[in-house]
Length: 305
Length: 125
Image 1 (cartoon, rainbow over the protein chains, first blue to last red):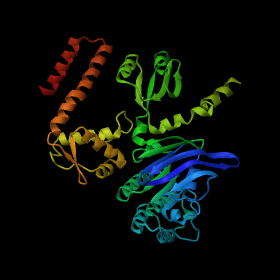
Image 2: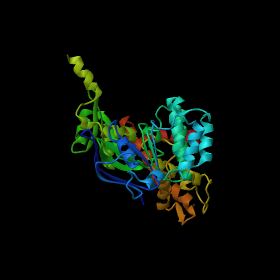
Image 3: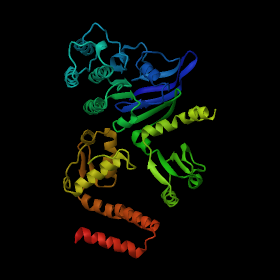
Image 4: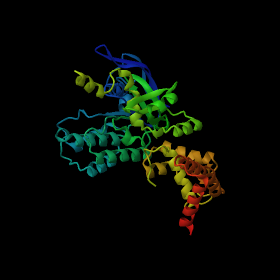
């Protein structure tokens, strides 16, 4: 069964398209990373999936039902971001109690153990927490809910490196014990790539790429060497990224479809091949169409004046 | 084993090679059950689908066999198969690299053989 299905989904804010003809689907019980640049449409998509907002056109289904104004989807979905609207009158332990009342799969024992491990106090209030602590508490609610569709929007905002590591581990362990569909957006793809099964890359409201993490990591290869030596190899190829680093030194990222013979030719030409991380690749693939060049160009122009 | 997550070698291949080494060292014996994808996932903090891919690779090569619903087991001749594979593939690529590097350094065939002999003596003698 499909946990998520979107067809030709479009959402506009003030005439600007936040989502543009987005079509993709996610099978049940996978951990999927949603990535893209700021403003690519990640949050918009997640809010539509959790029924918080409505698409303008297109079809969206969560477990076969339209999420907007749907009690079934609400009961089986949780959306966690860094602006959780928990009542300020409730103490943290009371918020957890409310979670237990609403979510039928809620694991209160897990909630309390994580609560203790991360050093929370029952009588604290949510609005008194530091940014990192707030995210940590939200994450506990998200994990403990055991919702069949769990959505985390930038869950690690403000968390320090140690807590982020704990979070990835907790997420994986709880997922292994209780498989469910987890969709999470992140700007720390390099930190959690091993935990993800699939990656969905959005670019300007459209789907840029959707593939398994294992495939994404083998999708491309980095080449570096002298420009004159590189040019013949880049001819007619899909060059995903290219940067001239020194006068005669160039780095390029291409699709990883080289044959063994081509590899040897490159080695003989003094070209060094290197892996490209999924995180870097996603940045490369979503930067080329902006037409504004790199941030270096901003400074180049001012220096010319 | 510590996974090399930035390297050229995919994680699932590293998992498969680790299991092979465990079999070579006798930590998994013939007809014994190996770790499940979930156990491997927990051990190495990786997605279970990646771990499963490593197990499937070994099953396709005949090093593991499948007992439906129970798990994957070590084939009776797994050890020999792994040794043959490593001789034919791993050693061959290492030697090719050696010859290529020697070419860059303008060493002769005799030079390389002399170096190999010296290294051999150092290891074994």
